[in-house]
Image: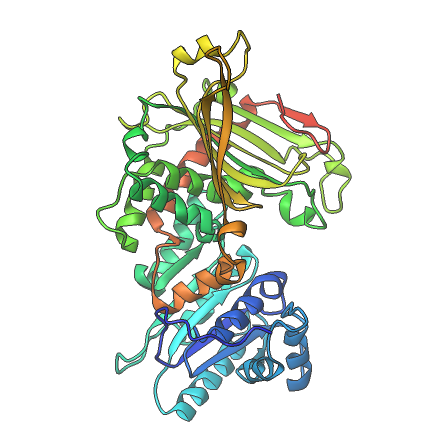
Length: 478
């Protein structure tokens, strides 16, 4: 049985209220509630904290308590029953429609009551666990009800967590950013791209900048290409009505995939503080060469799996892509001429996320390849999920009298090196960092705008591309 630990990571000691808009939704059930419970049992939440759920459904106090208990995804023996009960004691509920100003007034009153009970003004953290179409409505009501205001005595902060997608194009992203900026300062805004919290993605920087054998090779002189893959085996799984107006390019291309590119291609930051890291990621994204009507045919492949239009919620004439492959280029001296292949899709042969770095082939190796056409490149792979780890493909001489080489693999796997119990889930890490004010794993305004600029150069030229059909379980789409 897991015991509450005494982990000494930085934690917001000041009393804090965490408000979850849309607590009855799928994201709260799958990610937020389990993450908060884990943080609580690890003693990584303030001693005085409260979680307030806000949604449309009507619950009695006991009904809501049982509803949350059912969303914890607790394995038998994982936590003490006493800890679960105490965690539930910190959670309350405020029923209301998202466009009902009276509900926000009741929420503000409830929060003031908690502050009065604690005898001080608390930190306020808001999470928008709702569809993006509701962001503007909720943000406006937060403003009108005074919920965006920090403590008058300066003792507590106010912050907001907002999910991707951040806007549906460049214009809506700018509009949303302007609205957020009217309510909060940049240091108060935490834009979630949960891929940034993946342990292996964080480890890429450590791998590059802590191992002097690799960083000198991290440029166009030694690297031939970089392939970023985000593959899914599942199709719509009931999400067709949500997915069809968006498509793969907006769903994962504008955020997850481009963030992986930014991390693998960024320059060394001045420091490992959040501001300096986010500046370097934004620089990479801003240097992506935009597509035009001539280049898009050569550098972009779009596909749709067969049977997609028979899924629930899909338009029978849909031209939405469920797959893409992009050949992107970063216009910097480090990466001049190096192609970045960005590939993602649904209903593919396997589910995985990884980054392959292909180093240029040494022509002398061909002499030992015994006339084969085998790829002779060294490949460095960062496996993000599943089977998180790092592997390197290298060559050695085969035993014997001839000088013939063969490939071998050097591997590091998290599951073999450490216990997964100590690796925080992505949302566990994100919520923790929002509590302590660390924005490293959150996207900045500059990153969001730069990524939309690149994706919009593709979306604005989609008529120049052909939507190719592929069978479910396909591997590579031509």
